[in-house]
Length: 486
Image (cartoon, rainbow, N blue to C red; front, side, top):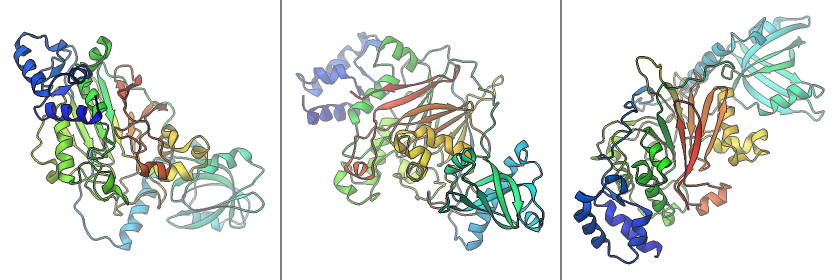
């Protein structure tokens, strides 16, 4: 059966609020869609729901009664009104970053005898000192030494890492401009010769929190509805699974215990995102793209709480933090337990009287483009193929985009891209490459996509891996990836 024929069958049933399984698509090769629909209507009263090839909107699916209902509390979602910005807003923005991250560093044992830049400059004799500052310069001399400029609220200072200190030199390769770090060294004639660089990082001995219930969370990103490359058939396969109508008995039992679904940005392909995009769009109207997206969302069982954030292809500003999706694009969509949050945002899930819940940090991941190319340690390990290294970098630096040029941002009195507390789960997307890793008991999840490789992605060096869906058992904190693409 041709792709066009399959598309027509899928759209026929979707318009009637029904999902199509691979078995039905096969039958549609010899039967008219209307015949299949009438046959289903006739047999509906005599067929076991679990064995049906075609299901309704999913809300009638009997979920595992042993699994408690979902619980979602929004810790943080940016929703400030636009306002005119001045130079002072930029100053306040970086000052706030410095204050928050320096607060995280001050209690570190490595940074004993902490001093300000101004006080260190007053020193005339050689003395061991510690500083906290924002990186303003990073250069390698012709002799192989690394020169770093560090600035705090009292001034700026030059620091040098000698080439004969290979350990610290290696550790400092991933220093980036505008990040806040601690340094330890010996001051001499207005220069600090460094012996250590301390990142704010997340604590080593954090508890690995586990839910008392066997509950699952599923993570999607980069659906790109409206693109000519949108993998609609594979996405329908996912929807059939989450409704308990696709997969092995084990997979269906797994779906019955899903209580949380995160969709981390790029819900649609958008309009005018990059040059030549219009020729790659199947749906050219942004409102129609979202209408189509929410038709899919309606098919997700009501027993699942859905948390939806935005990305760079969505109908919000590009500067971060990006606000939640505006109501004008949500339209008439209404569904219980659906939460619209900003990018980035923080959400607490499965909080109960006996369990504090799991803290989830959502970030679409726009800055990953910059760091995949500019972090030497990531670049030599595969760049875009290593989302785990990129996410670990953000946790170590306690910031989602520390370098001024790594993303567009909205300056103001607070830097919302600072990771003020360590999350239990950190989820991103954007690079269309799924990944799962653990760093100091933070589970790192990178969503895949449901868009095939586009000419633009080939041009910018992306190697997408579509149709993969990460899922976490919140009771064991074990994660795996389900593959829905043939």
